[in-house]
Length: 258
Image 1 (cartoon, rainbow, N blue to C red):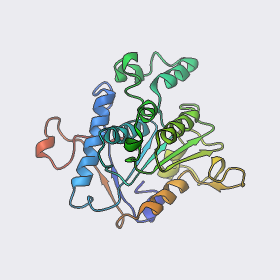
Image 2 (image 1 turned 90 degrees about the horizontal axis):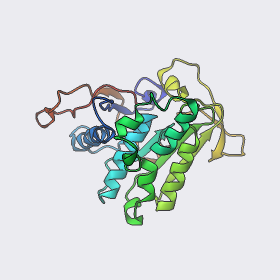
Image 3 (image 1 turned 90 degrees about the vertical axis):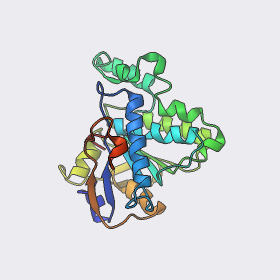
Image 4 (image 1 turned 30 degrees about the vertical axis):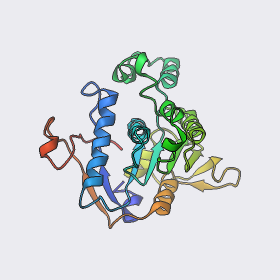
């Protein structure tokens, strides 16, 4: 994001990674992200600024779980907003989709979750549906963005997540469904590897108005509405030796996609 149009907007970007399976289970991945967010909140450099969390695909899954877990514990959020792009929010439902593609046996999702018995506990949409209203009220503004041409994670994943959040009583949930937008388009747009594209807005805001936008546009709009960041710099939180977190200023995360 720091080397994309977002960088030109004046944002400080932290790339928060997490260990991947088989190095870590889903629960441990969520812990990695939660510790990274705690580090940023406690940091003298970033703690007083608006902090916006953005995750794509599996990153949207673990970031959402970290935010849900904090609300469930009745703790104030560590971020000013949460954006999930093309995220997986219901493990069991997504594995059914992968079964239809014939890839469910090679997917790391089932073993990373610890088997079917843990699917519900590892699913943000399920976690959202179980929140009490006072817990849901602690959630930051949430933006979910998905494309209709995503053949890796179907866009109804984000639709169902939005429904679960709103039913639980989350106060600010926005859902953007974009036409012709595939699973990788967002990352390609951020990286500058493809020419800028604009997609028709099919779902919710702008629906039926002929509105068009880049995948990045609603994210920038949400950040602007919640408060600006400091002048741009790009900080990559690289790998920290396991077990050294207490003596190291950077949490034990590894380089990863957003």
